[in-house]
Image (cartoon, rainbow, N blue to C red; front, side, top):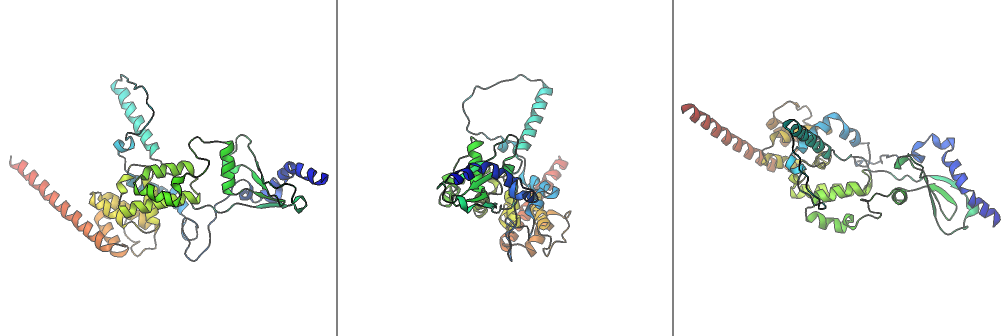
Length: 357
């Protein structure tokens, strides 16, 4: 028993040696970062594998970011919509014209920061790695011990977290174990220690039926990492609910519209969003959405469509070749053209009347 005790007591030193062994340093993803690796399959999910397309590289590319920002919109009244906060004493300032102009510019810059989109990442893969097997200490204790490096200055993803099992197995911690330990030592006041009930599938549907989309997405950004399977599940379920109920305008001028539009493009389901933009007389947004679609799916039959083509031509080309709801989209386009024609006739008549006057 004395020998077993000495082995257990020397664990800290042995763990440090194992985790910093030169053979492991050649694989940094084992120790410092649990890398995201794509799976394999005949038709891999792009949110799980980079085999079909690299959504991470696509999302951060300059062209995609530019198109998504244009699609998001910039409605200051919506960005600065009233929210519930604690009561506070209002503050009034007397400003010169120059100071007022500076305040306006600061408000615009703050609004742009509020519209910064959450990252789009592939689903992370399990990161457990066996470090050592010590069967001689099996049964020494019936508890599992977790050892966390809480040294100052390390990012959370790079912290060493090791687990000693009762059977003597020494391994790196799983994602769930890492997050629970890091939340214990480095507490975030807005993040729950356990996953909130609202994110469980049976409760999530009730929340979505109430159309609290921004609340769900904001809460998911606080609770989960962007490559967490639960984050991807919750956000995709929210996007699907918005798409099926055509509530796209609820997310316009929010930081979540870009990732939603990108998701619909990746899964080739932009028809409802296109119809919504046409019904709202947003032909340029419809054209940008089609441009984004053909940038993400360049092997489409109409990949030769010119980016500089007229918005109506782009949407019509998509309708002919790639639409999943061709009849609905054609009807929306016909309605848009008729309304536009009527508006042009009225404008022409008014201009002529002013000329006669």
